[in-house]
Each structure stands twice: as structure tokens, then as C-alpha cells.
Image (cartoon, rainbow, N blue to C red; front, side, top):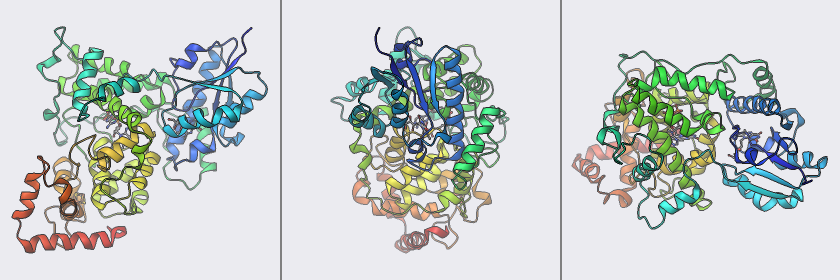
Length: 511
Ligand code: FAD
Ligand code: DLZ
Ligand code: SF4
């Protein structure tokens, strides 16, 4: 009789399709799951993210038990320090032959499992491929090999061909174009009703977790209630259906819009479910594709949505595993400023930033344009130290794990990797925020001005950024116009703008 095995399932691996479960035998092997201090504390995770994960983990353990698995579940109040301690506790009363784990999504944990755990456990640790992704790390490495530029757009086309999503039988993209982004830049004008994400009442399990998280971390960032996330696969599927029925048709048009009226617009609010394993990315893309073929959602919406998952999500994961661990140390723009306290308190006169932080605190969610063009753009313009802004994004969102967050922050927002995720930085003045939102009319600052005492901080900081990184960007073919516009300004105006920016940089905490 072969020896039983332990199967460790992590908090973001809540899927019954895991390679480790497929390989395991419920009559002989034992599943281990644990809520531990180290995972809850490597950054100060938003309390709603903790409730979401712990509740979803408890529901998943119950589901596995119903399917006949033996599950050793170590809840928060067992006080375990780290995941290895949980495996050790289970290994003690089982003469286990090996530990099976689906490879973790973060380098930190994968290294620990490979290098330290076998000795600590006196047990072989076998890592299995995470089959929930559509492109393996190895396939991405193959795609990247020998290319001068790793453009997401070309990777995405490969993925369309590979999966057949939105493809004609002759190998051409449906609609004759790969990308309909040019149609996706509308400001929200109130014309289409805002559907909001599907909300769920917390059950007894979730309520218990809320109590425990409140007791354990009374002072941490993030509202605990109202808590309305899905915590099971079937609820997450209902949330997906709700999105497909009500929001997907408007997803394309309003993808870049922001409004005081609503925190979600036509976004999916699905990333926390995808990343934790409650939804499968391919199934989500196929369901969206069906809506197009059924005539229930337009192509610009469906293509745009699929590109986010099939393109961006897979691409950033590929970049992460291609470039770690050196990637995390990149800081090509030499950003060293401290993260302002208002990223936590939300207390700032900048209406756009205050709204993004409020949404973040309330829901552990802000949509992509708020992350990229408001909090991200400001961190770039202020020159915030990459490590500090990275840890903030990793902590505050329910969907945040390093494999997806780090390339978005370090690469897309901070341009710290020299341009894998965009050859030029996403730096923008207040004009962009004014065009895409209704924030500016209600702000202490004047968006039409760059040098006055009450001028929008984004404006002067933008020009300060352009000026201080002239050496790096002046020759960039897509930035020449910006430098020409700067040169055309009267010298006195330029001086006034830079003075205003210096004054803001000297008094960042009071913006
Ligand atoms: P939708 O707008 O409805 O998009 C659909 C899906 O596409 C998302 O659920 C997500 O799975 C995927 N997606 C969209 N954009 C991206 C992207 N740039 N990278 C990867 N996947 C994408 N996403 C995370 O899942 N986790 C993170 O930790 C994370 N950190 C980010 C940090 C910064 C600084 C920025 C600019 C973006 C970050 N993103 C992250 C990407 C994106 O903002 C979120 O995926 C999106 O806002 C989630 O909301 P949604 O489900 O409503 O997305
Ligand atoms: C994010 C997270 C948190 C907060 N807590 C736990 C936990 O207690 N137990 C667990 O198994 N996983 C947790 N996770 C998810 C892990 O941090 C995640 O699996 C790794 O970061 C790899 O992506
Ligand atoms: Fe943001 Fe500037 Fe508009 Fe105020 S004026 S909301 S700071 S972009």
C-alpha cells in the first residue's frame, strides 16, 4: 500500500480542478488548509480581503469534505505562524510520503517551498503546474525568447490564435480587427443605467470570520462591512452572469470612465474571484464570447473584456515569472519619495484621489483607471519609492497577489522596468482626469491651471516629471511632441509651473 500524501491548498487556489487534487486520492490522501499569520501579514492586507479569503477557504474546505476528502483545516484562532507549520502539524499524525502543492503564485512562497520546506518537513515537496492559466510560464518564456520588445498586443494575438477566442475559421480576428480600443474611450454621461456588481448576504460562516478579523486586526485599513463578495464558486458564477447580463454591453464604451455616482461603472468586479480560483479565466472568456455571438453584447465590449483576461492577465503573469527575482528590485526612474499618508487616510483636497481611496477603503476595490491614472499616476509624478507603492497596492485590493500586482505597479504605473508594459510612461496631467470623469467640478483645485496657488497638482507635477526625466524620454518617438509643447511655453510660465511643482513636492502631505 503506497504511503498517504498531504495536499496543501493555498487561499488563492480554491478550485476543484487543481492539479494536486486531480493527482490525489480522497480515500488515502489528506488535504491541508490553513489561515496563518505570515500570509495575513506580509503586507497589511485590507480587512475585507482577509474576510473574503478566509470565508471562501472555509466554504471550499466544506465542499471538499462533502466530496469525500479528509481536510485538516487550521483556522485563524489556532494561531499558526506559517503554512509549513500547518503541514508539520498534519504530518505528525500521518505517515505521509510526500507533500503535493499546486505551485504558488508568488516567488517568495515558491522559493520557501523549494529551498526550505523539504528540510523543515523531512518530506519531499512536489510542486505541480497551476493549470488555471492559459499560458504556462514556460510557453511565455518561449514566446519572449529572441524578441526585442515584449509587446502585450502581439502576445494577445498569439493567445487569440491559440484559444480560438473571437477568431474566424480562416484565422482572421472576428470583426476584421484585433483590438477595438479606439471605440472604448467614452466619458460616462448618465445615458446607460449603472448595474453595480451582484451582492450577497454574509452567511453564518462569513459572519464568524468578520468577527474574528475584527478582533484580530482592530486597527487595520479597510472597512469590514457591508461585506457582499461571493465566497463560493456558485455565487461567483452568479456574479459573472449578472455582469454578462447587465454590465458587459457597456464595458467597452465606458472602460476608461470614472464618476462620482458609482465605484464600479461597467466593470466586472470579478478579479478577486478569478485570482482566488472561484472562477476559471477561460470559462469567463468563453461566456463573454457567447454573448457576442448571441447578439447580446457588442464586439468592442466583448473583445475589450476578453483582452483584459486573455491578454493582460496572462501577459503580466508571464512577465513576472520571466523576470523575477531581479524584477522586484528595478527602479529605473530612481523614485525615492515616501508614499503620502493620504493613500491610507483619503484625506486630501484632490477629489479624484479622495474618491479612489474611499472606494478602496470601502470595497477593497477601485477600477483599473482609478488605479492607473489617479493613484498610480500621482505616485509616478511624485516619484514615490517603488517598494512603498508596490506594498500599498498589494495590501489594499481584494484581488492583489504579487504575480499580477507587481508588473502592473512597477511596470505599468511606475515605469521602473524601463518599459516592458508600455514603451512610454502613463504620466498624465489633470486634463486626462477631467476628460474621463466628473471629479474636477467638485474639487478644491483648478484643473485649468498649472501655476497658480490653487492649480491642479497633476498639472505642474506632470511638467516637473517631464522636465526631470528629459534625458530618458526626450528622444522617445511618442514623446517628442510633449517636449516641443514644453519648449514652446514662455520661459516665465515654465518657471512658474516648476516652482508650483516644487512647492507641492515640499508639502506633499497637505495636498
Ligand atoms: P474589469 O475591468 O472588469 O476587467 C476584467 C478582468 O480583466 C479583471 O477581472 C482582471 O482579471 C483582468 N484584468 C484587467 N486589467 C488587468 C491588468 N492590467 N492586469 C491583469 N489583469 C487584468 N489586477 C489584479 O487582478 N490584481 C492586482 O493586484 C492588480 N493590481 C493592479 C495594480 C495597478 C497599479 C494597476 C494599474 C492595475 C492592477 N490590476 C490588478 C489590474 C486591474 O486594475 C484589475 O484587474 C481590475 O481593476 C479588476 O477589476 P474588475 O474585475 O472589475 O476588472
Ligand atoms: C493572501 C492570503 C492571505 C491573506 N492569507 C492566507 C492564508 O492564511 N492561508 C493561505 O493558504 N493563503 C493565504 N493567502 C494567499 C497566499 O498569500 C497566496 O497563496 C500566496 O501569496 C501565493 O499567491
Ligand atoms: Fe483631480 Fe486635479 Fe481634477 Fe482635482 S482638479 S479632481 S486634483 S484632476
